[in-house]
Amino acid sequence: MKLRGILTALATPFKDGAVDWASLEHFVRWQIEEGVGGLVPCGTTGESPALSEEEHLGVIRKTVEIAKGRVPVLAGCGGNATKKTLELATKVSALGVDALLVVTPYYNKPTQQGLYHHYAQIAAGVRTPICIYNVPGRTSVNIEPATVLRLAKEFPTIKAIKESSGNLDQASAIIREAPEGFAVLSGDDSLTLPMLAVGAAGAVSVVGNVAPRLAADCCAAWDRSDIEGARQIHLRLFPLVRSLFVESNPAPVKWALKRLGRFASGELRAPLVEIEPSNAQKVERALRDAGLIKEPVTA
Image 1 (tube, helix red, strand yellow):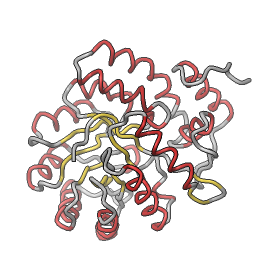
Image 2 (cartoon, helix red, strand yellow):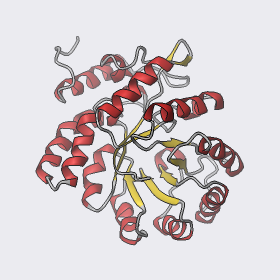
Image 3 (cartoon, one colour):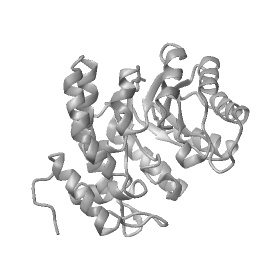
């Protein structure tokens, strides 16, 4: 299991209130054809809090079936209660995923010692490799480098972190002291190239939903030491990256996927709603500027 390059944080397509399985299958196949380095179902972008457990497991099962081992599947299974998280992680592990994406507990606001025990219990309970998911803007808690490094050194199955703190110093501190084989993945598309420069292995990417080839090419250019090529792609994608967060993720992403014809519907689960028309205009302009659509911007 190697987590490297662009791993797309997959949006979950819905239609008439249910998971749109046909759109999901076509979408996953397209992602693989476009050259992504991995698939991440049921994360934040996948609206995991709004999925039933049956839907959650079904989306992951379908992704694994389609991937057929061609790319790793890093499946979201975090929660804010350790016991429930371990129960879900056990069920997800049984689906044949390559790794588990486990978010820091949200709302509870545990201490660093609490975070350590949370991940230690999960690591002791499942054999599947674990990727810590640090996203303080969503969870109101930051797992500090010392805690990450303690876990990485004590538990061989804790193999990676998706670092979404937006703090390059924090990422650098982890990369500097991490054991061999531990991967740091950018969780912010706008910081992927800077994080690659300090030693990150790649990114769990939102923009990969709408521009998987370009996102993958950026990482590939960096890996072959084409720094200028990577920089050019980064700057080309930058306005699109910013536009995909004009409202709460994944609302702008889903609007873009419908606009590009990748999803039959841009439907979201409440309490998320479709983006405002003025913000839709911003997303469309960014898609055009990135070369993903050719038509004039609609009025």
